[in-house]
Length: 119
Image 1: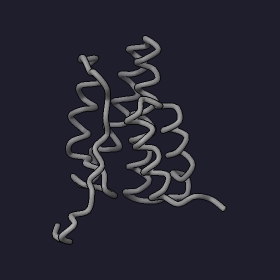
Image 2: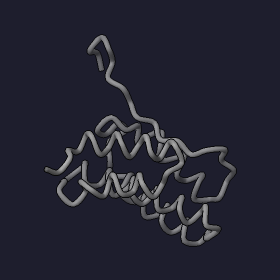
Image 3: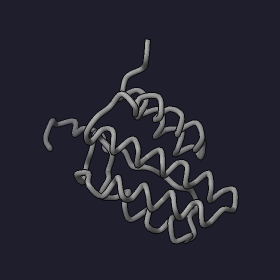
């Protein structure tokens, strides 16, 4: 039985934050073909970000620039918070990564639900 969106998204974020970009890419790819709308665009953007980091780590600056640019194209049409991901915080990070700026360790911010139930 295929795993669900929330499971794959959370697993991919954890893997990405651990620097395991290929595995994060695989976790997100598991569900992106089955999704539509904002979910699909979010997953496509995250997959491209992970692929960009694989290229950057391999020393392929041009390949990383291209993948980060493609990721931004997907992420730009999303709301500031999408499926628990802080897209408004992610976009400027991707711009910086695309430009090759220093980064101690790339992290994705996942928004947590407010325990009081307020937006």
